[in-house]
Amino acid sequence: MWYGGRALRGSVVCVAMTLLYAGSSAHAESFTDALTSAYHNNPSLEAERAKLRATDEQVAQALGGWRPDIEADAEAGKARQNASGNGFPVNSGNVTPRDTNLTITQPVFSGFRTVAEVRSAKAAVMAQRADLADAEQKLLLDAAKAYLDVVEDQRTLAIDQNQESVLQTELDEVKDRLHIGELKKTDVAQAQSRLKGVMVSRLQAEGDLASRRMTYMRVVGQMPDQLEQPDLTLDLPKTDEDVVNLALRNNPVVIAAAYGAQAAHADIISAQGNLLPQVNLVGSLTDSVDQSSLSPERENSASIVAKMSVPLYRSGIDYSKTRAAQQAAAQKKFELQDARDRTRESTQNAWEAFTTAQAAVKGFGEVVDAASDALDGVRTEAKFGTRTTLDILNAEQELLQDKISLVKAEHDEALALLELRAAIGELTAESLHLPVTIYDPAQNYNRVHNQWAGFAQNTQDNPGDKP
Image (cartoon, rainbow, N blue to C red; front, side, top):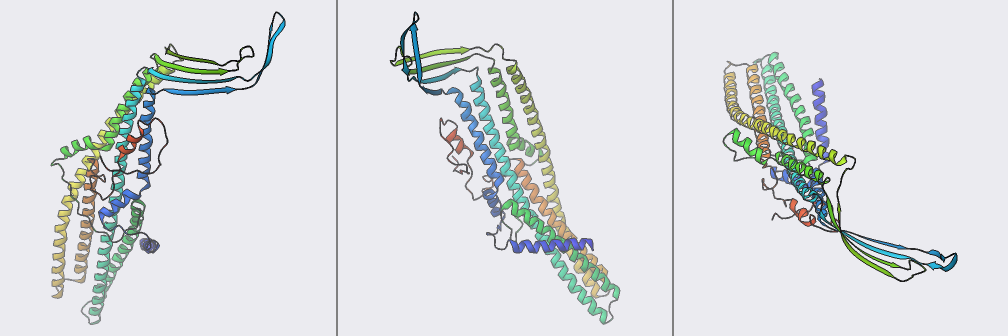
């Protein structure tokens, strides 16, 4: 009773959700439609794109180390001045001092910090681009899994519904034969038991489908209609070792970790630059008016000087920052090794899951054919009285389970194939040839990395054509 009640509640939820979203936007009916909708509508991917655009600005900030600082100051006020000589007043009066000053500081040498900071910022941009590719792959994999899960549950539900219809027909036949004395009450009870069991299974399948439809809605952005098992192919290398090597080269997690290590190494040089001399050219223009009651005329001055500062000791902070940067670089090095190890593990597991699911699909396909033939034989023999009602029910139950196992194996095969594509970096919208405008991460970078002034044009996604 408990399982039946839970399944019944799941069925009610399924019906309610179907009615709730009946008037929503057009359904994604194909596998490509589902991935396309997720690519366009998912906010997490938009957030990663905005994060990359923010990271692009680090290059502009680092390049600022080559550019001048320009400051303008102005002062104006009122003053009363009294001047005396040998105890006698000489001059006095009110003045209105006004002073303007323009200072330009051009860095010449900054202890190699600017070179290192630019290198670190560019590596950070490349790492974030790889993170964006990884986020895109995860989103498309989630959308694909949501699609395959709905397909699996829809097919399972259809099998249960068909079996329920078959068992209901057989129960009616058994009752008719009971009335004419061909069968006994035991046969009726057996048929009723199997029918109740498949009804519970059908209710549970409806509940599972309702849950997975909501997951599909969250990831893809719209409720699914009746979906079909996609026909997926991938030209894989012949051995698992070749697949792993390909993943180690192309997996975005590994690529991001590699660029992260490069950025950390550049940060060491930047921190060490604080211990080296700094050289700047400083130019200034000054215009002063009415500074003294003794000489109220205008005064102008201009100068340009070379200024060098040599840090001797600044509380040991610069040494501490250098040591911290060295440890951060060591951390990134180990993270790169960990990323490679995890990628190797996940790729190997996906390969094993794919080959296992392939064998399972082939095997269960043959099992279903054999079980179907066996059921036909049992039914034929039952007509001649050599088989019982229980024999028929057992054969039907075996065929039902074999069909469900085949559906699951086909689901697992498709999912493992997609996981392999993600491992080798080929689960992006571009590699899948989705009918979308591909987001170009270089577009914003090319616009802002060398920009001297100005604000963002907008904060939204700016997809562009690939160069």
